[in-house]
Image 1 (cartoon, rainbow, N blue to C red):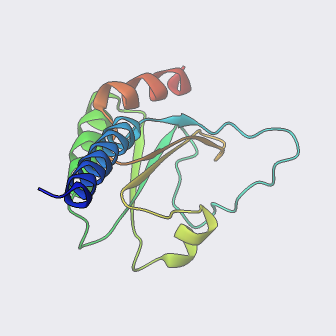
Image 2 (tube, one colour; image 1 turned 180 degrees about the vertical axis):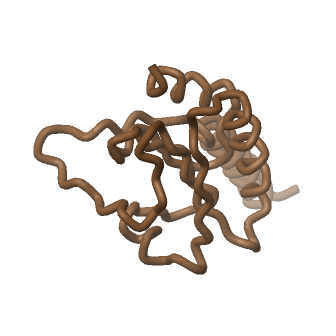
Length: 143
């Protein structure tokens, strides 16, 4: 085997290894709820057309017919909303309402938001959140 072929093989193995590590790190972040409590000076986003509840928190998730993981989000959100009756659930088809997706900077599907009763965005997740994470974010908003 020539040295140039050996170098190419080593470089390919290193590239695949690096790609695997990056993929695992991104997969670990997927679905994690990130706190998005508004900070001083941040501009509020118009959410008047989203159908948010004014009596309790609302889980809003963006979906599309062609999105496979979106069904997983729907199952998790339905389960949590059944356990926490004060929580509303709104599902928005990104293809039918691209303006709302643009306003909330939705760049990938599925994307899930939690809004409080005053309509302020409190949490955001890209990917499929776990039921436990969703529940732990929603329970303080119900108190």
